[in-house]
Length: 347
Image 1 (cartoon, rainbow, N blue to C red):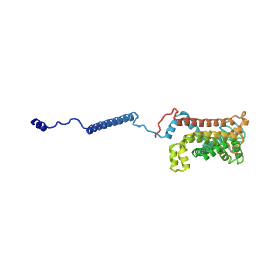
Image 2: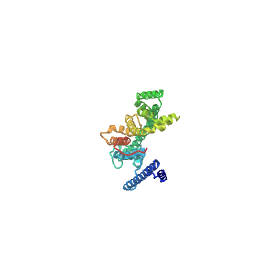
Image 3: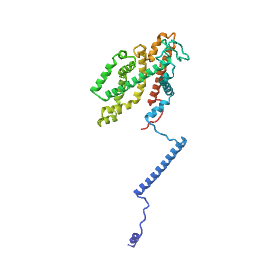
Image 4: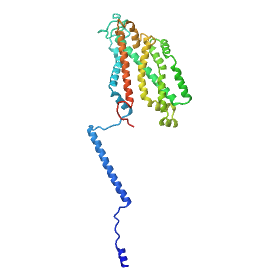
């Protein structure tokens, strides 16, 4: 009994094993300390990278800025843009530095070779070739850019529309495209231009080329836009009651911007070629207005006796088309993610 009382009066030994809450708190404290250490290490690593880079940080760039960086990283893009800008400046300000106007012939120098007075010579009627070349280059560029811009806008809207709307609208739209493709557009454009006067002939040429030049591009855009109409953001906008035209303008066309811009540049080349062909055959620009096509047409009869009449316009046309092709190829490589250009697009 005494032993029992003695044992009961003895103090109980303290439990030295930590409880579950204390153990979890200890583990959390260790994890927090590790996170602090890792954060400090990351900060130190970033500071070391900034010190190596001269204090600059690695920044994410936007999509179009990345495209521009990839584009101007290519030597052919820089060469193409530089030459194209020089041609534009020549077309804009060439007549201001020329000694003669393109519509003021020098009858004392008929078909004269290049000289100090006539830098590129004269044609058989005494027209200064430098002034005529500057005006003709400007006229061809104006027709090419306006026609390509109009055809691109029409093709983008029509192609995305027939891709977005399904059912009968899509069938009717494809039938319209198939019908327009079999129409002899070359003859219709020639008839439209011949019915106009000389001063407004180039405007009607732009109208005619724009009316029939968008068909092939519209089919291409429609094919690409078929996959975009199944995207979640297009379906969400449609279910939210957004206007169909707004969906096409804000969601479909911007996501096809790279293809549209690329085809716009190719459209300038095609439009200049069409204008040159029509004017060379006498079905395009009419005198006294002039273009690269009319200059080539006027010099074909004297190509053996006065080769400069055809040589300089031909060289200008070749340089212009090659320059635009270089820009187009560089832009295609800049847009293509599988090209050799590198970069990172921000999300």
